[in-house]
Image (cartoon, rainbow, N blue to C red):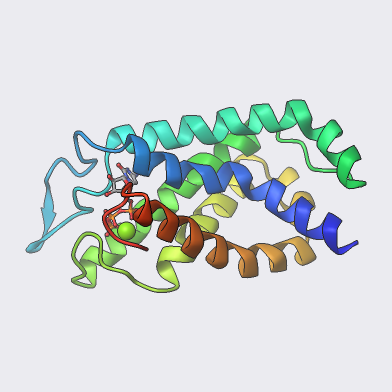
Length: 180
Ligand code: CTP
Ligand code: MG
């Protein structure tokens, strides 16, 4: 019961979890804001690049396609039924996660935080909000039926924990310049 709840919630969010991590590995090159400023601050900053965003989105969608292929086998092994990802849902989760993170950078720059500054709460949940919002837009029937209230609760509790541990891990491995 609890295993199937947690497994279903994390499975449904996987295409949104992976893009940010892939962006860290693949990022670099031209920043999305092209160096533009708003007032005396950068619009987004050098931490949001076209390459990172494209690679992250593609990785999230590719992962969803892969998860669809093993869904039945993994679900059987766990004694539960895991959600499948229609392409629109996969795109909504992956691109939405990237856009949520980009939106947070826009907010952070307006608050006067430099690139890489930590904003607790915003850093951990920006991409969840973006992913669910774009998924709801692109897959309006799938999203509320997949993210039931209990699963949503698990996502809101587990995501900050996962985010903190993966980012600290990436920092310790030298992949990221800050541990958040
Ligand atoms: N990254 C990227 N494109 C994105 C998101 C991330 O290229 N859309 C890469 C960048 O190299 C970035 C790194 O991943 O520096 C870490 O991502 P993140 O912590 O989100 O960015 P920060 O550099 O901390 O910048 P910000 O303060 O704007 O969040
Ligand atoms: Mg950061």
